[in-house]
Amino acid sequence: MEPTLDQTFLQESQQHTAPVPNFKDRVLLLIRSPRLAFQTLLQHHEGEQVNLIFYFVALSNVLDRALGKSAGDDMSLIAILAMSAFSAIFVALIGLPLSSWFLGVTGRWIGGKAYHKPIETVVAWANMPGILTLVAIMPMLLLMGREPFRSVPDISGPLEIVVYYGYAASAVVLGIYSLILLVIGLSVVHHFSIGKAVANLVIAFLTIAVPILLIVLLIFGIN
Image 1 (cartoon, helix red, strand yellow):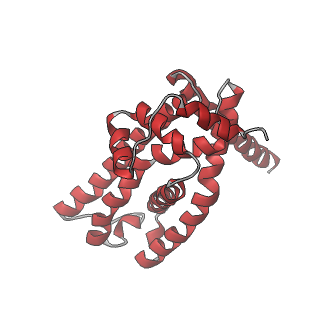
Image 2: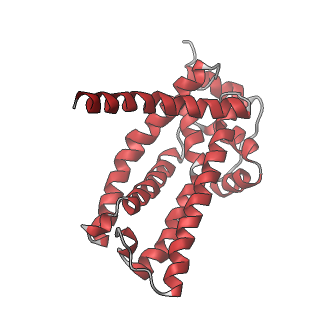
């Protein structure tokens, strides 16, 4: 029986790297040497820990969107958290794997070698910094309740100001760091240069954004 494409990729990866034994060491390696970390992680791209990471990444994204959409104007904090926890399941099961699939397809358009399973590993671990926003948001929720989710939050005390804007700043910094890790991860998984990995991201984004934009323009044009 012919090996699958993912099995072929795994065999190629194992010729160049050695495994890191545990989760903590993998995280530390991701901080110290991202390229080596991704080379190592791709030996274990069958799915270990990826689904769990996807869920917490999705939860972080959903909570951030709830903040942006001022969900606290109409919902209690408990309702926001429950909705976010439930919605994150669908984002983790559909949205993140689909984005990995797109990055695989568009990457192969420009000469990449990887398919969606290894790329799911890259996408998951590249978003590890984003999970830290869940840690950063907890003090804000404990201190301010649903106030940060309102369209005009009442932020008056000095501690509230520090916590609120500290979360906002950390979310931006960690988001940029995740993007950098994703570029490095794509360069490793597809055997790309950094420039080509950036092009992979741009092409994937345009593949999704352009049709949506055309549909919107068509709808408004008809109206």
